[in-house]
Length: 160
Length: 160
DNA sequence: GTGTAAAATGAGCAAAATGCGCATTTGATC
DNA sequence: GATCAAATGCGCATTTTGCTCATTTTACAC
Image (cartoon, rainbow over all chains, first blue to last red; front, side, top):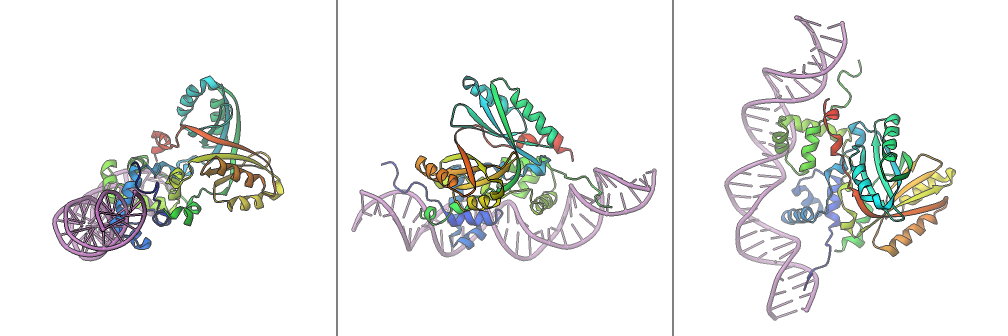
């Protein structure tokens, strides 16, 4: 009585077309995918309301904003202060993302910095946050595999 | 004789408008920012050629593709085999991103999985890769701070 | 202050895309 | 075979785009 159709009718072709050209018009996507224009339109609308597409912010290169350094700070936190630490980290502008990992209160803090001194300052601020017990900073030296997701859009996912 | 103008004339207002509405027309962006339409147009064109905007793939939510689990695998690698390990990891579909960190051959491997069993399998495959000495998997349990970058677009960056 | 080059602006215009509505067809499920 | 949602195909008014061109503003050097 709940769902009549399959859970997630992902459209690999449509997403691939968008990856290839994020600024493609609906008509262009329709042509390249072989779908009807209205179909492309309605699906994109659905993706939008289902929040399948995350913030545009993810597309903006921090380096372009003057933050060429990227680092991950693995942070050990006093469990009871997890919430307040999260809040405090959120107030640091250079903190882009904070994820709580399995294990006893480990946080993965993604930060960016203008230069080495800047990173040093930020790392210090994180360590100085009340509730933070220990930190371990790893500076990103190179990208072995650049973020990608297209490879998950193959046949197995394609078939609805 | 080289550069006559400042390095990177970031336009905070323009990017903010795009973050607020990624599908806004150039005209809409022009109105909300107070810039002329041609200005919006030429800047976006410049951003595109300067590669200030990263792949559209980053906007696609892996959960939407049937991969609700996200994990980070910190991987210790035999230094001499760094390149081959990078290549091998790139052949694992569930590996979204691999970054080389400072320190003696540490890799941060971002993976997604369909479920716990799937993640177990993937982690095993990573550990089984020739050149990988040790791994440490952290499953993402919650998002304390969701990826953001807008806060870096304030006055200090805005001015030129 | 003066000069200069890049950036921003404003206007115009044909071509293209969009945002609908609507009727019909296809597909999957029971 | 009945049924409902998705996909399709068509039309049309409105909006946006892509592009050109001339002018103005801005930033920076001398």
